[in-house]
Each structure stands twice: as structure tokens, then as C-alpha cells.
Length: 263
Image (cartoon, rainbow, N blue to C red; front, side, top):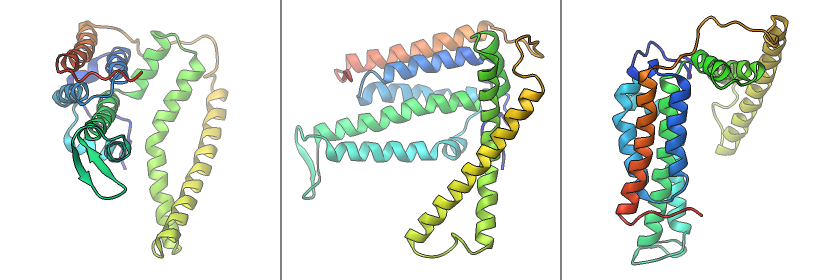
């Protein structure tokens, strides 16, 4: 399996931008979307995110592979919000204990779209950002502690290994006849057992990695850098693009009368 958090030969335009500039742009978009529960601002941000796909080297197929749990969670969250919210306006669906009105449907739609609009920029960021470049930027530009940065880098690099480890544990358990058959309860218990095995492997791998990094002097105070993290004109455009998307989302919601301040 290919590593989850790596570029895989991605040479799109956004891969050349400084990771901190991309992170700041994503933070601006996320902050705006977290302030309102409406479908207009979320839809505006989503359309902008889809337009940025070619610049990040991301396709719809890759998006589904990397974000399908988030997409399903957003859909379920929107549905549950729609059926559990207080009814307002005309009733659209009434099946006894569940009912959906115009107001609750709008709230559920806003919740679902907001979840997707918050998740997609993060997926875009990780799809066009090398973990090593991100660590360099965090240490050199953000001046974060070296141990924190290197620990973050190690964790990001191990995500792909954990995915491979999950497959390996699953195949080993199926070879022993565990988890490949039985009732839904038995399959659930087998999945929980496999998750526990993955947790044990992750703790062991993290412990070995921490000892190795400490032995090689990664916790020292003096440090040199193989690659210098720099800013360019592209980073200015990335920041302006993030601020423009955030502003457009707010203006569209306010102009359409859909702005719903979360507080």
C-alpha cells in the first residue's frame, strides 16, 4: 500500500508553496466555516475547494480513497441533525417518530456541507504537502520545539506503515480463521481485536523510534538543516486565495440571508 501522507510524484502547483502559507489559508477558511451553520457559506467554500483540485494534484478518485470516512460521517451527521432538530416551516417527511421539516432539513444540509467544507481543505493540504517540508517549516519559520516537530514528522510518516500493518494483521487473523466468518457480533469482536493488535504494534514501533531518535541526537539544542524553508510570491497568492475564499463564503451567506452565527 502506498503511504497515505506522501506526494507520490505529485508535481502540482500547490506542492511548491510553503506549508505554513497553506496551513494559514486553510485555517482562515476553517475559522469562517466554524462560525456559522448555513449551507450557503459551506457550498461556496466547497465549490472553491473543488476548483483547487487540479492545483493540488487531487482527483475525485483520490479524494474518495482518502476521505471516504469523513464523507460518510458528514452525511450521517447531516441526516441525524435533520431528523432530530426541532421542526420549523412546512413538514416534508413524517414517519411517526421521525419528521423532517423545511427548517430542520436546511439545518441538516448546512451541518453536512459545513463538515465537508472543513474536511476538504485539510485533505487538499495533506495531498500537496510533503511531511518533511512541513516539519522544516514548523521548526524554522514557526520556531516550534525540535522534539515536537520531529515527533510530528515521525507520526505522519508512520501513518502509511500503520495502514500496511492493519492489512498484515487482518491477513494473519484470517489465515487462522478469525474475523472472516460468523455473525455480525463475532465480526465486530474480531475487528476490535485487530484494532488492539494494531495499537500494540504502534506503541512498540513508537518506543523503538523514540529511542533511536534520542540515540542519534535528535533532541539536541544545536541543529543544522539540509533544506531551508523559504517564502515566495506563490505563498502570497496562497494566503490571498484562502482569505478570498473565506470572505466570499461570508459575503454569500450574508447576501443570501442564510448566515446563522453558531453562538
